[in-house]
Image (cartoon, rainbow over all chains, first blue to last red; front, side, top):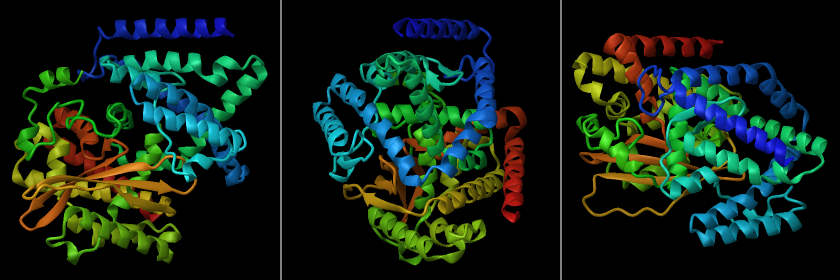
Length: 263
Length: 207
């Protein structure tokens, strides 16, 4: 299955290159989104896929499966995730968090029946959220352009590289040799993740003037926050201006230098 | 993607008691408003039954008095704010306020079984711009959602001017779509879009 992965990685890399080429034909001139045309097309594709297949399936899943079982499924995959979250915390120089993540896996895998129960959280071991994209960011790699991938959704170039590694070391993708089992697990995880977001759909639908840019900007802000573990420097990806004392302070002057400083 | 679930949780930010606000410390203010609104949500029959109307009412009574919507709108609009006439600024503020209130009143309805943790808060004497950090724990969720309020002091009262849910500012997240609207149709174009958006949300409430 390594070859399968390599083929996929190869395709993804080709797509990155393709997206970079498209950068030549910029659309609305947003500095973080040089391939907006391509991204909007991919976003539309993902939305269509969601509407026709994913969302109906997730809705059915939510309606049919008793909610403790849904939590069990989500916990099971969350426990598998914790393993690499711990590794990433270690790579980011946060041994205490990494130890806690290892503790979570140990407790949940044993006392929590293979992760189905999240006993560790009730014991006060907090769940973290880390991945290779964040680790690269922590190491100082600039995030690069915003890219929307079919199936995977929003990433930056840096997070795309992170994603390739995430998939490569993911116990479900990479360690399960029995392909039907692997595929069923991946599918179940996808549906479970989607079902958890069902309630959020309406909020975004109502909040956004333009869903595409709302999702993009939220993604960029969220990643920035995650990399800094909830305490990002106080300026946003666009104006580069801090949350100054007045609207005047939000003036775009010096924006590019601050964006550069952030990167 | 977890962040979208997180966006919902901002519901609880609309939580606040009115008159006490004067001279209350910012962290105490956030806490008392949150506790009061959570208490109402848990008891109110109409909200339990999913009444958007009632949720909007609650937000307007309890939460709006503690928000500085002019400042929020200015932040969302960014550098174009100065181009707007005082009249345009006023209309923009009203429309943006309505959009936020409607959207998040619905989030309030969606989320009922949550509890809120207040993170340690320190403030230097004389400070006028602070962040109060909270965490929302939802039943069944593995990870709490962070919910941070930026407040500034206006005279005696602290007012919220930004709400950051899971690292995403509900205010500045509008900046690029607002900028696009202004580039295409000027300030009036943005006003028109906001009005149309609110009208369509209003139509849904009636359903």
